[in-house]
Amino acid sequence: MSLPTHLCVPAAPITFQAHLQDHPDLPRWLRYIQRDPRQPGYLYGCPTAAEVGTHTIEVLAYNRHTYATVSQRLLITVIPAPGGDPPYQGEFLVGNRNVEELLPEAVQEMFLTASAGVWERGDLQVINITSALDRGGRVPLPIEGRKEGVYVKVGSHGPFSPCLESAVSPQSRFRCSLGQQPLASCYDTFAPHFSIRWCNLTLLQVWPSPTTPGPVWGSGVLEDDGGFQPPTEVPPQDLLPGFLVTLLVPLAVAALLCLLLGHLMCCRREGVEKRDLQTSE
Image (cartoon, rainbow, N blue to C red):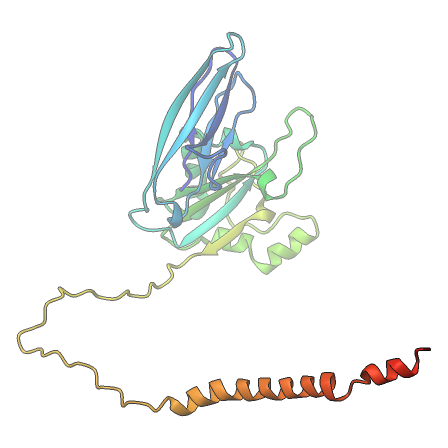
């Protein structure tokens, strides 16, 4: 689940730096953003089952007026969701927001209320919030009102509504390829606060993967009628032929090589007689 952490609302221009304790950077599932030294900083992310536990984050605050620095440790405890991950998940692209604008809890509640209008469910929860720039989006032009865009993943234990299913139907995808709006059988309850890019809507069904049962450990004490049955004895094996083959074959090859080398060096040399014949008196 998304874990936005609001650091503070600075009165003076303050810059924050955050990293994992005894590490130079944050964990890969945790992100930090601060647009301006006079705006608050946010830590947010979506941990997986591998990150269950307590993570110690060291935050360093630097005052740009007085040059004072203050450090503080932030403990983030990741626990599994009580009911597990929602099997029905929908990801919306909000085009008129930046990621830090959707991290406050009040804005998330407003988004869930708008989502309930098209999902027709009341048990919705925010699973993840990601900037569109992290998904390969382009940096917007420096024009008034242009935003980066935010992907918001919402989950529920109930099925999708007909409105959402019609928005991702093949007919809607075809209309999106033509630059038209997809088909929708309900009223857009996100407007005017959230501008949803319906052509980027993604619906997923996530089912828990079956786990393989591990070994069952006993008490280590035999039962009353249980007798220890030792393994049967292995019959003795004759290792002498293998030993002789391993030892004698290399020795025979070495002896043949020595004889061949001695024959070439001693029996086939031309020696002193050839030297005397070619040397004058």
